[in-house]
Length: 363
Image (tube, rainbow, N blue to C red; front, side, top):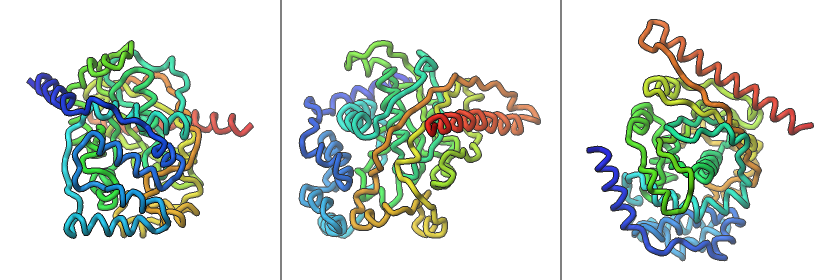
């Protein structure tokens, strides 16, 4: 019954997608290389596929591009909406839109701006459900996650769902920046244990979705991207950028409960997405953000708030590690201790890899 419902929902979503894809125009290339324009890319692409009467318009897009213009655009939109916030909506994951966004927006960003690449691809499994666990030190919009999701999708045809902070779904700043439902429609899963577990237990998206794109070697399975450091990753700041913080244990629990292997990935380069940062915890708590990194770039952000989803150009390299099979007796009295030990053992393994890679690149 659940599988039939998923297929019916998927077929409905496919029917609602425009027959013509989004064409990356000269204006989009301009937005890619002009930092305040990144927010325009996301919203324009969404508006090509979705009806969004509460969204930004062309006059407001133009204001994004001038110093302080975002504040005028914000006022214009607020007046246009009748002195209210954009509507908050909850959307269903739409793999077809995720595929379109990846191919039409992420493709040029990943290839020409972040220069993302997978290393040690021989460690990628050919099939099955996975929890992909990656170090997370971007200290900004989760571009390290989005880039890895894109690269894995390109390499294996996988449909990827990242586990993200709840702030990416419901914080007032995000509600103004990004379209309603955007994170959910792209497959985002709230970083809460219940949502994480529900996403793992849900049926995988039918692999036939990818057949239309002509990709080979496609295998079904649920693929979740997860940052074991949680918010401790972005909070650690520039000085500790190569040091892994303590791992949460929820992914070990769920891996064991559902017999899902963990695919560890080491990312090098994400620390440069927003470099030289310091996190001011009191101010971060005041504005109710999961983290608030301060650096010289923040002075520019005050003039161009639309740069909130932008990041510095870097080279993102992902080193795929061998699969970790979790087999714990979680029903025993020592279950909690064993889970914690396994999480920290994995952290130590990845820390050793990161240290070796950083030292090697410094030579």
